[in-house]
Amino acid sequence: MASTAYVSTWPTDPRAFESLFEATPSAIFALDRAGRIVGANAAASVLTGYSRDELTALDISQLALESVAFVTEALAAAEKREASAAEMDFQRKDSSLVPVQVTTIPIVDGKHAGGVFFRVEEAQYLTEMRRTRAHMRTLAYYDSLTGLPNRIFFQERLRDALEHAPGQLPCVALLFLDVDRFKDINDTLGHALGDRFLQLIGERLVLLVKNRGIVARLGGDEFVVLAPCAGDGEVHELAEELLATADQPYRIEGYEQFITTSIGISVYPDHGRNDQALIKNADIAMYHAKEQGRNAYFFYDEALEAPIRSRLAQEKQLRLALKRDEFVLQYQPIVQIADGNPIVALEALVRWNHPSEGMLGPDAFIPAAEASGLIVPLGEWVQKTGAVQMREWQKRFGFLVLAINISARQFHQRDLCERLVEIVNSAGLPPQAIEVEITESMALFDAEHAIETIHGLKRIGAQIAIDDFGTGHSSLNYLRRFDADHIKIDRSFVAGIGGPGSDDGIVKAIIAMGHSLGLKIIAEGVEMPEQYEFLRTQGCDLVQGNLFAPPMDPLQLEKLLAARA
Ligand code: C2E
Ligand code: CA
Ligand code: CA
Image (cartoon, rainbow, N blue to C red):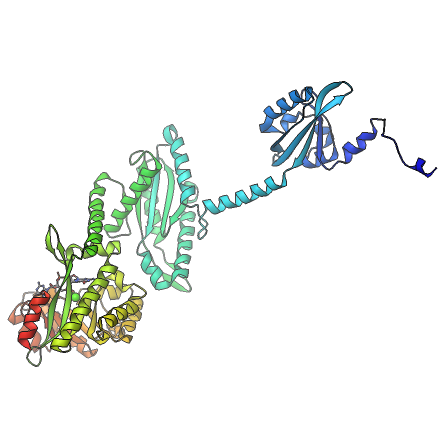
């Protein structure tokens, strides 16, 4: 009796299946043979955003936009009572796309097959994957520090621009912008503030360029502006504006900081027909701007390449020379004026014994070594070789100081002091036997940093000489704060002693000022007895120059030291 309360037989009225169709969580579309939507369930409406009435006015291919072929095949298969399945995108009413998995079920009406059920389910994992992909795309295409497009993005855009350029644009300009001496900024401010600097620069460039082009960061301190333009005049204007905006003061941590930039420009089609060539040539022009003194822009020109090629070749040679041990040190005595001119120190002066060009002086290769960074290993070679040599001479001839020159790049090395201590220690030479010569202009370039480094060097026991003194613009205040031991009067002033200019007065003033600050004075480049006499009567403490001894090879110098002993 109770069983009559249940439906115990298969429903025979087809309308009974409508409840199943309606309530199924999958979206189901009933299609006729032509693909017109003749019925859709509630889930279909939710998935697509269309009402049921709207859906029944559509053709399935209006939803499965890119998969029309599949729809046609599925309908044909249904005629043969075959099912099919696929993944595709459905376009919603709001035009957004949703990735879906579709299964088709042939509609079999008695003996006839005709039309098809489209069962459609949102492919969740595909949606996830798309989201991740979009995120990855941002990661891959944007620079995380500045938020600017990165090199990959930029290159794609450049290629796009070139593809569309013929006919449409007179030209496309690429302005390659590099911050001048950014390494020094990083070394003095630290990397966190260096990063902040780059962000600020990026923001400024974007503000300036606006919709005239795109700004990207290529890496490090290199930015690039890609700008379609009507002609060279427009590019000149933009470059001027870029230089001017970059060198406005930056407020970082409450301080005003200044930078300048160098810009290299290449223009399509004159300076290259593809992205690679344009980037390379803008880079070459940028290098040229640096070499011409920075804070400038240059257009690419074939003629710029030759000097750069030869410098690259020289760099390669220098690298090899270091490997092959082609550098040699000469030593030049520094003698005291009082007590019969004893030799108190030796300045190490590097030379390159070039296999084909003979002995080259430092002016011929130090600039290239400095520019390429090779000065660091070369400088360490000088320190090591000098220290070992000096240790030997000290054993035989008593205490002598080794004076070494360091260049700007070395001076800004963070671990300069530590490395130097390590080198002299392993040579067995006390740090007190080292004098580091720092040029006046180097010390003044970033005086606060110089003071810190000089104090570090003094803490390890080394002495300090301010080299080429008189060529820069030291203030008394800095000179006092540098806390050096010696001033070396630049040889150009010594050469002018007794001459028509005012060099006598300058030399006199330097000596008096140095003494008032408790510094000893070395005059370099002393060639003539009259120069020596003048210096002696003015109270100069030490002299160095060909009058006493030119720079000498170790063997020669040994003879001199032995004769004097
Ligand atoms: P500097 O430090 O001013 O070195 C003194 C220069 O004056 C040397 O030139 C020396 O040969 C020259 N000199 C010495 N006595 C006289 C003289 O009586 N008359 C004249 N006219 N010149 C004299 P050098 O050896 O060609 O060195 C040139 C510069 O190269 C040096 O100038 C120094 O700044 C740099 N340098 C030399 N060795 C090194 C090194 O190991 N590392 C670095 N970073 N720079 C170095
Ligand atoms: Ca020197
Ligand atoms: Ca000098």
